[in-house]
Image 1 (cartoon, rainbow, N blue to C red):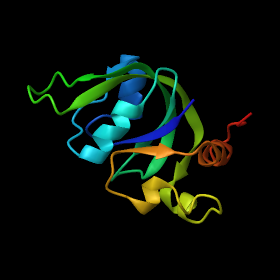
Image 2: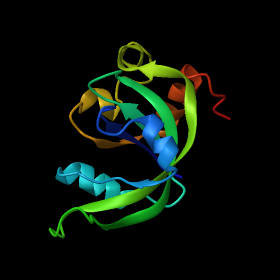
Image 3: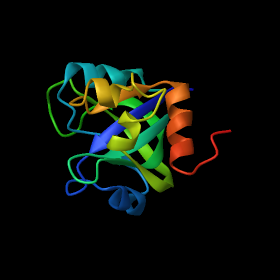
Image 4: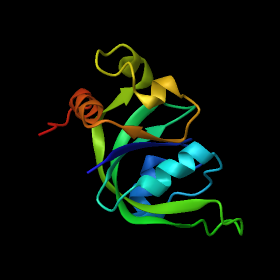
Length: 138
């Protein structure tokens, strides 16, 4: 299993809306590195859902339920989407400031490449973040 992080501005697509929708395709990615990350996602991979710009915190966990396919919002075949479903909310949102101050997260892509909207997370980083958010990572 691989681990990822996706970013969304809450006023555009919030965790609450995602939970209501029960499933969505992750579209609008127009950065080649982020696109390559979408293409690397596999069914069953876990995804941290991060509220960017407003909130600046990981608020939920999602799962990849369909691997990369043509982005239906564009005819340009360079861009892809994946389907995600919400798994659970993080009991205590994990803020960017907390992650920056936590040992073991200094290489987190969210911190090193802050503008990247879809980024990989190591298993160890994932476990540290879950623990910070009040979830037993076992």
